[in-house]
Image (tube, rainbow, N blue to C red; front, side, top):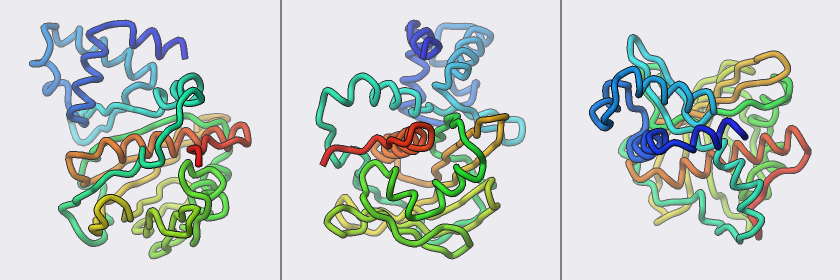
Length: 252
C-alpha cells in the first residue's frame, strides 16, 4: 500500500484521478488540456498512478484509454475505515436507466465505461470457479447470501439473492472463453424497479502464482458511480475470500 499513498501524495495525480472519476476512459489527448503540464509530465503521472494500481488502461487501435481503478482504494477502506462505520446496504445499488436492451456479445467492438483490476494470489481454476459457481459466489458476495445458477456456458443465468429471498441482480452469460473471459448481461432489480440491461466482462490473466482479474462494464448510464463502487466491493470481497477465507460482507 506504500505505492498507493505515495501516488496520492501529489495534487496533480489526485486531480487526474478526479478527472477520471468524472469521466472515465480518457486518452492522453483528452487529459492534456485540463492541466498546466507538458505531455511528458502528464504521462509521468499516469505511469505512477498505473504502477500503484490506481488506474488501468485499455488499448484499442492506436488509442490508450485510462480508467480509475477503485479496487485498491476499496481495499484501504475495508482495512481501516469500513470497520468503524455501518455501511448502507444500498451502497452498490443505484437507479440505472440503460439505453440498450437485449444481449450484446460483441464487446470487443466497444470501449468499457469503466475498468477495475486487481491481482489475486490463486490458481486460474480457483478464480474461475469463484466467478462462475453459484455456491462460491454466495460465500463471497458482499451483499447477497445466496446465488442460483452456475455461469459455465453461453445462455446460463445466475441470480444474486438477498437474505429476504428477493433477487437483487440477474446475469446471463453471452460469451465465454473458459478460464479466460466471461461476458454477461447486468440486470439489476433495485432502484425504481425499471428493468435495465447493460453488459460486463471478467478477464483472467495468469501471472506466475497470481491471477490478474479485470472487470469491464459497458453501456451503462452516466450516473453509474454506485455500480462502479459495487464492483470494487465485489472484487475486494472475493479477493479476501480466496486469499484468506474471509469475505468482506456488508453488515446486516
